[in-house]
Each structure stands twice: as structure tokens, then as C-alpha cells.
Length: 338
Ligand code: APR
Image (tube, rainbow, N blue to C red; front, side):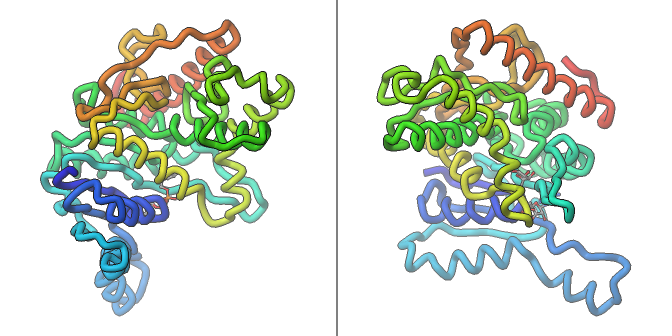
């Protein structure tokens, strides 16, 4: 059990995270910060005054705390609009930002289109972490995932092991679910790795996909697998299109918790996660989804897996897409890309 876990952004994902952290007892204290509801300067004074008294984070925290007798949990929850409640957190999970949301015409923005607005938010997130918990391990979920993690790195310069993005666990979980259904077996039997950026170029690695240790092709024909891999690449958008009000929030929260659990219990679980590459896979200075060992020190090792030629070229294409977004970040925040 850690002393304190911080959750930045108490929206849909943040809410599930706080609830689950309290239920699972991963830390003595969970601290959730969120500036919402935002005070609109055009509103009449009474409305502004009312908004100032509200706090999404405090409301969610109180709701969860009032359920703790039923959860049989004595975890304390701190919540507020400001970052000071993160003081001394050992680990923080960043969900701050605007999610993808379906437009009235049914289309929706790509993760990259969220970049500009979420970069501003990420600047505030970085300042908050630097001021109140600069030594914390940071797991970032906000989109566009690879670019936001890269921005946090540029702003905080943490050691390589202490900053990690959550995407691969989620993408792999989606792929595992699809494969399990197609194979007619338990989801528990399916192991898979999805590497690369968290976007349409991600690479479900078929050569690493196993059903109870056996090659996946034994259970699912190659053509069907190709369709499942295509669905995996677009799986986030499929949920956005159905929900209408935002993006997936339960499976992303569960995926981050899978990583938190490995860190707090020093399990050294191997997961796909967005990590700083310093020469691995021939990449230097970018954050890309690769297999890592997660333990008490955060990222304890980046694993270089043998890929087939087509998986390797898929990964190269994905890295190029990540590089392009990071160059965009550099233009916006005035740093230089590795
Ligand atoms: N600091 C902290 N929280 C902030 C800040 C900030 N500077 N700016 C905005 N927020 C909060 C919002 O007020 C909102 O409550 O971040 C929260 C985000 O929650 P949701 O809008 O419900 O979005 P959610 O579905 O939780 O997704 C969060 O994860 O998967 C990604 O694309 C998704 O980037 C999005 C993030």
C-alpha cells in the first residue's frame, strides 16, 4: 500500500480511478484534483459565485466516501480544484484534458485534433506535479497519448523510469477480447501485445498473440485475425461513436490500475506501455508503446521483442506518426525533438 496516489482530472476516467483505488486499497490516501466546473466570465455574478462553490472532484469524492462503509474501505479521499492536495503523492495518474466527443454529424475528432487544447492543460498538469510531487511516478492517460507523455517529459525531465503512458494495456485488452470471442475461449486464455503509438497506426503483434500458450492462428484464421486487428486500431473510435458524449472510460481506468498494481506490489509484470526510447527499436528521444517490466521503480526495463518483417515495418510507420505529432508539440511548446 502506498501512502498517497494522486488523480489529476476527476472526469469519467478519474471518477472510476478514485472509486477503484478506494475499493482496492492501493494507497492510504487518494487525492483527486479538477478545476471543474469552469467559471465563465460572461455569466452573471450569481452564476459565477455558484460555480465557484462547486467542485466536481469534491462531489465525486464525497459520493465515494459515503459508500466506503459498504466497500469496507478506510482509504481517505482528498479532493479539490487546486493541485496542492497532491502534496507528497508517491504516484499520480493524469487524466486531465478534453476527450474525443462525437460531433452532431456523427464524425469525431482524432486524438491528434485534441492536441492544442490538451497541451495547455498538460502545461498546468506539469506545473502542479513539479510543485507538489516532483518525485512521483507518473502514469499518463490523457490523449493524444504519446504527445502528452512527451510534453510531460519535456516539461518535467523526470528519470526514464518515472514517466509512463497508459495505452498498450488498453489496446492489448481490446485485442484480447476480440480474439477470445472469435476463438470461443475465455479472455483469460488470450495473451497479446499491441505496440507503437496510441492511434490508427498501432501494431497488434500477431507473433506475440497466444491462446493458452498456443499460436493464435490455431484458433482464428488469418483473414479473421486481420479484421480483428483492424477493429483494434479503431476500437477507441467505435466507443466514441456509440457513446456520443465522450470516450471510453472504464477500460482505460482498469488498464491504468493494472499498471498501478504492478508498481505498488513490485510484481514486475510485463505490459505494453508508452516509454521513453533511448536507442531501443532504433528510436531515440520519443515515447512509444513497447513491452516494459513494471515494478516498484516504475519502468524497470524496456524489452526488445523480435518482430516479423511486416510487424517491424508497421512499428516503423507508427513511430513516424508519433514523431510527426511530437514535432507538432515542439512547434507549439518551443522545444526540440529527439
Ligand atoms: N487540471 C486538472 N484537470 C483538468 C484540467 C486541469 N488543468 N483541465 C481539465 N481538467 C479536467 C476536466 O475538468 C475534466 O473533468 O479533466 C477532466 C477530464 O475528464 P473527462 O472530460 O470526463 O474525460 P475522460 O473521459 O475522463 O478522459 C480523460 O483521457 O482517454 C483520455 O481522451 C481522453 O484526454 C482524455 C482523458
